[in-house]
Image (cartoon, rainbow, N blue to C red; front, side, top):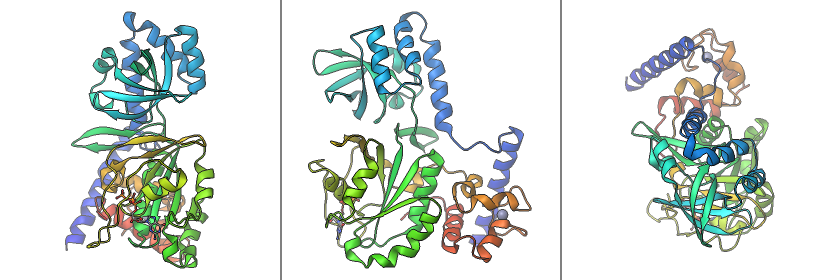
Length: 381
Ligand SMILES: Nc1nc2c(ncn2[C@@H]2O[C@H](COP(=O)(O)OP(=O)(O)OP(=O)(O)O)[C@@H](O)[C@H]2O)c(=O)[nH]1
Ligand SMILES: [Zn+2]
């Protein structure tokens, strides 16, 4: 009975969303509020850039399509006192910025930047590329935030909260045992990565606890969809070199349930990354959240790793149910074959998705993940 009521709720939501998008002629757009918001912020920035902000505007404008090196060159031309760098972490009003040459500055945010943001918490986030004016050898003032890509965010109490920016790889860590693998949770993280337009890498850690061949069928399904997969043991050092080579020179975010070995993997990748590792709680085998602050960790081999506690629980993410099918790579190709354009692929007749499940073209376990995600988007694990 409760399930029936839930299905009808899901259907109503689908319809509402479909109709709204139809009205706005926006049926093909992937949900990417982040980009829109960044554009809006950028516009506000340019408007308020008149007069006092002229030099800042020049720097930002010239850096729009530039890499950090280009940005540096532009800045040198405009003002030799300005430097660029990446925000490693934000502590209240202070951000720690690292330059390309590895120097770190503790920076405040320029007052005018604060006034153009509707939510002051979002002016600067970990991962941002910023232009700052050094004051002394270790302090500075952030003048501008360069345009972001690969933004991960969540909505809390109706407000968007950017967790990290400029990400290009999401490492989804699961464990082969202790805690047991949860393919549904991997699928949820995959949907999140697809939604944000980021490349995912699926890592199954603690492979020392099981027979690796047990995982071949599961990994085969993911590989068939074009996802990169990797078996590791942080404890035994297995698969670590491979992981290192995949993440070299990229900015990767580490995600996954508590206790799967994220911190252990980071420590195995690079000694002294300094993350705390605690034994999995004996009572429930779920592990404790021992990592508490967001941080971009520079890698000796090049690139950055991001450990962000806020993205560990899927329910923190915004996923619009009518768009979920399009975020499942294996379900997406069938969606256009359904009789009803607002098909939920759960109970409708002439549903191309359900037909593909019935004759084995879609893995039934993946389809179950889809149904769970639609019926219980806020499921906790
Ligand atoms: N057997 C085995 N145990 C591992 C492995 N990797 C990590 N562990 C253990 O799993 C437990 C949890 O590891 P963490 O690295 O703290 O896990 P986490 O994902 O960072 O946990 P949170 O910080 O709570 O999110 C620790 O007791 C580790 O020693 C592995 O490859 N094999
Ligand atoms: Zn359908």
